[in-house]
Amino acid sequence: MKHLISPTDLTVSELSGILDLAEKIINDPKEYSEACHGKKLATLFYEPSTRTRLSFEAAMLNLGGSILGFSTADSSSAAKGESVADTIRVISSYADICAMRHPKEGAPLVASYHSSIPVINAGDGGHNHPTQTLTDLLTIKNLKGRLNNLTIGLCGDLKFGRTVHSLINSLVLYEGIKFVLISPVELRIPTYIKEQVLEAHNIPYEEVDILEDKMPELDILYMTRVQKERFFNEEDYIRLKDSFILNSKKMSKAKDDMLVLHPLPRVNEISTEVDSDPRAAYFKQAEYGVYARMALIMKMLEVE
Image (cartoon, rainbow, N blue to C red; front, top):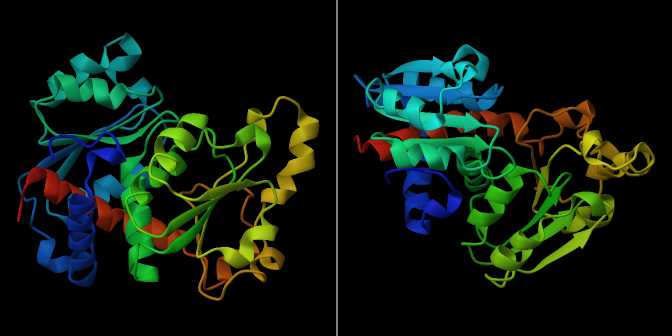
């Protein structure tokens, strides 16, 4: 596993290995507290991040390793015009593994061509976010007990949401998966994902524009933010925005064991009244992100 750029870089067997290791870490974190002693993780974040950057850093520190890097492009030589290729060539001599977030799709892939250390894509534009997908899968597996035979509602910005795109790419590998795609027409899932991923894997799916109508069917509801700036006019946004806000009234129609996930940050798409619902798993999901990344770092560095 030289680099992780896309969720499709991981086979079902590799996914299982990472998730199984993550569950072992959850059960006995002290056992792994020196697993990466002497190793260094570089976090190259060209755009803002809270959970992803800090969870990568927490993961490496929890494994006994060290961290270095930058949190904005302005604080790196990118502000002077240095290319991603040159940056990673230099960083390769400073660290053992690298996590990169970049606003441009494909930047981590470019870095991987010039790197002598493993590169992990920590999010590239609206394209991929494979470690969020590992986090999502770990959360589902740990809380639901399975990754198959699930009806999953994806709600909000499905057009530009990289977390949604990455999650679909991985979940299609499991049996009995069905998707309910809930979004405004303006923010529906890209055609290439429907054709090249869902239909290519014979995955049943339906597209709807009302959240509450489908609540009783769902095992998982994965919320994302509907962004005002994605609409052509404010009237359409005002007309549609409340249809994609999760509240207690809508939760009353859901199964007793349905899970609500969200990659965070949330703005107003999940009412704070839902936070006290035992089915709200998004803060637990953020916690699991550390364990998922600990397992991934160990696998990529091939440490025991």
